[in-house]
Image (cartoon, rainbow, N blue to C red; front, side, top):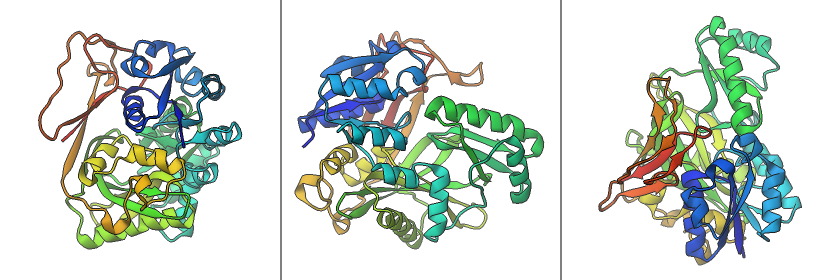
Length: 398
């Protein structure tokens, strides 16, 4: 039984986890930077602990500070949300050593899939289709050699990345130097890991992902797929479920591939298995597993009726999928019964290359009505939006 959870994140996902915990009778502790001290989710938490100054490296990526916050508040679990430390196997291992439940995969499961390079190797071992790519790149020169072998265009990816961060496309050797430096810099900034690898770049693919849930008893189910093809700079903008363009056969094959991944490595917790579909050939290629909650989990919740965050908490406490206490039925009882669409509302400066904008929200009005869901952690009248973090303000799902 989990009694008190440290939420090691910020913004709308921190508020989302709070809501699930409150409905389950679990106390919450929010850790926050100095810049977020007046945020809504901080005010609504049962307890809050400031863990450092605004830069993420000194606060939301500060493992000793987060562990200390858990210890001084007598918490028994940590939920990492998405981004920041959510895919950091060392963080999961430290949580275990300190007697804290990590709401996510085991450190071994994280190492198998959270690291993108390792995930490619495992996917190849299990027979999943892959785009031509590499292991860890030693340096810029190594990247040039590998890109020449694979053929342009290529995409550089941060090994610990996610959420569209740590990605750069290069169409020639002349573009590779800046792309390498930019991807490494973002990997270090957002995930504390500058390690890169590369893959052949598909210019106009469809992006489809399958939501899975797995428990500690060997049970794995999928909750259908999401279409995340509408992107800007490799970051998802609009998500929908189900993916309307899939045939029944394609849907079956993708979901079975996702379940296979969950079974063969003894995966535990929520995860998303991502694929790209070549627009010309129709072939699908495995790209990565995100071993965490996703920004776009709301559309899957809307079409299945399953609360994925509550499922994460119950699975971490030892619940068995298919039992009443897990909140997750058996695969044959999971049905997609609607169509849902999620749009991200962001604050950006269009005159400055769309970098995150900042300031005070002087007036705020939300959409409302039957079938409308809002996930908003930082957007309300009077809220101060800082320049230190992602530009996402609100997720609107219908």
